[in-house]
Every structure is written in C-alpha cells, then in structure tokens.
Length: 462
Image 1 (cartoon, rainbow, N blue to C red):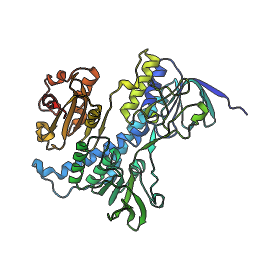
Image 2: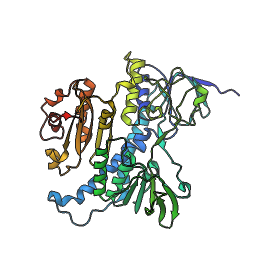
Image 3: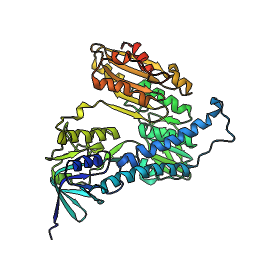
Image 4: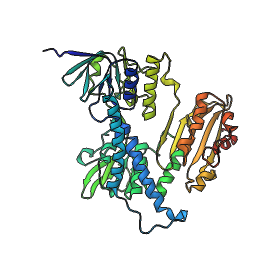
C-alpha cells in the first residue's frame, strides 16, 4: 500500500540552534513547515553542550572562589564541599527551561507541524518520518554531531564516558582520566578538579589545544597544572584495560611511563556528524570522507533546494556558527540579501577559567603568510581590573597587517576576555584600521580598556 504524501512548503530536520529560528522566519513569511526532531529539542548546545556545561562551570567557579576566600579577606568556617546532586539539579533546571522553550515555540506555531520520529530521505523532495511521507519544495538539515568513539585498544573492554554520558553521572569520580586535550577535555577537566576529583588529561599530540599558538597552549597547561590537574602529552599509544578500581590506561608503547588507574574515563577526542542514517544517497546529497554534508558558500547541498545548517555541514562547530547558518539561509531566501559563509571571521572561546578567546588568524598562521605584520602582547597581571578581581592569570595578544593596519587576529586568555575580544572582532568586521579602537576611550576599570593600550605597543613581528 502506498503511503499518502503530506505536502509542506518546507521540511526542517533537527531542532538545534538553526532549525527553530528558521522555522519561525519561514512561517512568519506565510510558509507551512514540517519540523522533525527525534529526541531532545534544542540540540547539543541546550542539552549536552553549552548550557549544561557552562552551568556546571559556574558551580565549579563558585567552589574555587570559595576556597580562595581568605585571599579576599573573607573567612569561611569549615572546608568547601560539593553536593553534586544539587549541582546537577541546578543545571537541569536551566536546561529544562531552554529545552521546553524551544519545543513550545514550535508546537505553538500554527503553521508548523512537529514530528518526533527519525527522518530519512526517500528522494530529494520527500522525507519519511515513521508512518508519514512528507514532501516539500525546500528541505533543511540541522542534525548536529555527537562524540567520536576512537578505536583504542581495549576500549570496548572497559566502561567509558562521553560528554553526554558524563552529564548523566550523579557521583564525583575519584580519578577522572580524560582522553583528549582540547576544548571539551579541558573544560570538563578543570570543572571536575574544582569539584574535588583527581583529574588527568591525556593528549596524543605534543601540547594541549594544538590549533592554538604554542604560547597559548603553554599558558593553558600552566594554569591547569597549578590547580593540580595532571597532564600527559605525547601519548602516542593509548590503550585501556579493566582494573579493580576502574580502568587502567596506558599512554605509551615504547617507554616506561607508568600506567594510570582511573575510576572513570572520558573520551573527548572530537565530534562526528549525525548523518549516517539520513538516507542522503537517496537524495543525491554528497558528504565528505568524515560524513559532513557538502555545502556551497550559501549552504546549499548537492541536491537542489536542500540545505545543511549547523555542525553537520563541517563549516563550524559552534552554536554561533550554527545560528549564523540560519541567518545566511534566511537572508538569501527571504530578504534578498546575499550573505555567505565566507563573510564570517573565525571566532571561538574555550570556557576554562580564565576563558580563552580567539579571533582571526593565530600568530603561526600569520607567520606562514610571509606578510609583514605587527604584534603586541600584554600580561593580564598588567590589567588593573584583573588584579583587582584577584584573577590575573593569562595574557592578551593581537596581530595586525603592517601594510593595511587591519587586525589579522587575536588570542585573549584572561578574566573577561570572552567578552572583551568582541571589541577587536567588531573592528575586523568593519574593515577599519586598528587605530580606530586604539584611539577609543574605554570605561575604567574594565578589561576592555587595556585593548587600546595593547595596540599602542605594536611592534614588527620578527
């Protein structure tokens, strides 16, 4: 028996950051939308990413500050302890508010029909959702990514955690071993160390956050080690085995470095797109070798009128890039405004404490261009606001084109730097010379006020 087809103007698959916003724009323009989400509304950010982790980072920060109370002349009676169940309850209250808000916005939209099953393509214009066959002239994919499970020797003989399953853990690990020394591993590592767990971060490469400059990596490691986090780099041969206390983790096959014994192991080695079960081949939608959907500069796939947004297109791995994908698609389809992926400038932050924020090119990337450039650095210990707050770790670094005076990039590691860096980012988008901000008068006392001073110290990059 042939399944009857239900027609819509658009189908959106996945309720991450881009999908719900696009549904709102399309329905406001008078279109009918079929919205498909098979699990949790809000995507990675709301459910297992930014919202829950940053809520827990805030709890960890509060604990860390309380332990340092005496430095501020504050006396606390007794040791600082963590009620992990209370931490989780606070987190889940915040998550639930965001998740239910997203779902309610879709279900209360009378031009939007919500389906809560898995979607697979039947053709470039039809999608099967459970017993339903949906058809639309435009289809938008927003299915996100999940944690990579690396093929490590012995991995499947031991229990292990990902960023998702770790959030379901309602106890404090005695010793959390983290495989992967980048954003997810570092944020979880510092968080659980501040909660009271012993933490070891294992990284295959020679340094942490390898896509950042070496001086940034070194500063990050120094901050983490000062808090008692153990770090092993050059771990070229990671292998695991069961142990009565949890898991035995080896980090090398050629030297005598002792194995680690952990109560829990977290895998934090990257993300993989949720595209394998979409039936993309039936719609002639191409992917790269890693499963990311191939898109052009306006996020069109290889199938006519099918678009891919968010992490699954490989054009960005952040909430802000996913939301910008929505903005690009909406601008082109609804506003007659030709916006492109290549319009945006690289920008991201790592929410360790203090946060690391970067925009544009790194110093090593600037050097690789061979073009004349200027550089300036300033230690956060020379930023009054940071000193006053008792949080003066880290440094700021900015790079400028010596010929055009345009900012090429910046790395800011320090208190408030995740906000302060937007001063530089906005100047880059304005295509204005660095002197525009150098001559600006900022409010005292702030972290941002030292950015003009930083720029006044520019010297040739040698």
